[in-house]
Image: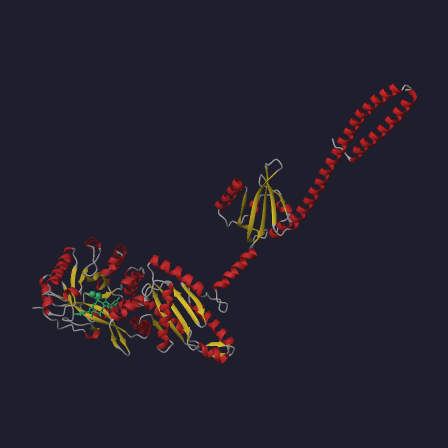
Length: 639
Ligand code: C2E
Ligand code: MG
Ligand code: MG
């Protein structure tokens, strides 16, 4: 029952009326009924006691009412203060820039604020009664949400970065705090999530990161990012046993452009250089501007120095074409220093230092060129790069020739076959040995074209000999180990046979023992395929490739060619003699022919004949010569 001020006032007035009535009544009684002064005194006493008692009772009631009334007032004040607080909270709730979302314990949304609507694009009616999973971006794995609910259950609070989806479908990052709230009795009642949209912060963070790691002029990675990427690349190269190359590029006489045409033109030129360089490289190559006119390139898969040198040459050539800036036609030359991982250095710092000193060397050597960290390497690489470039031209301009070296039957001394050996008729250097250019061709990939060409020539020549009545049993062609494992070889051989019309039985393919043993299973498969075409197969340079006898037995091969290294010491070197004897015995036991190469003396031929070697090839019989110079008539006799 509530007591108001009015109740309290009424109690006080009642008390005053009662007091006045009491005073009047007792005065009247006293004056009219008591004459005796003793009786009057007694009555006055009794009346006084009763008055005091009744007054005390009434005062007590009035006081209690007043106090209760005062208590209610406090409560009312409290309630008003609460109401004020709630009003303020509601204002804060609605005006805050943070989105607020309240769910009940079942996880259904019961309240959202205005910022929530602004941030998410959803209206109240879209979300009330829904679950917050409506906003899931799909960016977090289920474990993320499991951890979030686990924290809410254990400590009643979770905060962290979360990616959610706006109504528009856009996903964006939020910083969110979710808290479990309780009612007056301390029972869990709601979950309140307060979040802010941090996409702007993220964006500026990203922009800051970009600024810190990129050169503002060219937008290329700066030294910091380059070093970081290079460190990662070296770590990965170490694991995968790959080689990397670091190239330091410096524009020659760039200062002159700055001094004569001004820094604006200089800057535009640097931008244009950066663009041209970027367009040259694909994935696996990082380009950076280290400062001024200095750029760096990291090639992540560059196992050979010849590849690094070729890359440097490509850069030099690529920057040679003029740059047109503000109607100025600018020509620039470039110097490049190269350092290799792991050959020259094992750390990025050291690679940079080495490339820098190589760059200095390139500049001192007259600029417009590249230098490797060590001079010998530079010369070697330059020579190889030159060969690689020239080989391309050699193929186009038909500078390659096929020479044929006779192969004799050791028993009858008859010339029964030839080996086709490629030569390069270099316009300046004369005849270049395949030992010099075949390895370069293998690295640059030109070997496929060369081998296909030689095979075509040899098959055509064999057809010609047959037409001329020359009864040769085979023409042998070398197949590079690079091509041997490749599927195209089969197609290539089939095509050449088809085009030339040569009976496959006359074509012998020589593949080195090491190529076969590199991947014996692939080799076996390839050999069977080639055998199906009807061609003969020989293992070249036998004795140098550590064949497994078991594997050898399974190969569909018709011939072993004893490497000339073992023939050289015959017949006096005991080891060579023993090895040659073993190879002959081995081949015969497996039903293969034996062919010895590098026979330079009659004693070698005699020894091999004595030990039942079938065929011989070497300078003693005849050197490789052009087809027209083969001597068919005068075969030397091994007496
Ligand atoms: P190979 O197949 O073992 O060829 C034999 C090499 O020994 C040839 O060297 C030949 O000229 C040389 N030779 C022959 N008889 C003697 C001799 O009595 N004494 C000495 N010291 N050497 C002799 P060439 O022509 O310089 O070829 C070297 C290697 O180049 C060849 O070794 C072969 O592996 C490769 N090659 C040659 N032509 C081709 C080709 O068209 N394609 C491929 N992939 N490789 C080829
Ligand atoms: Mg050969
Ligand atoms: Mg050989």
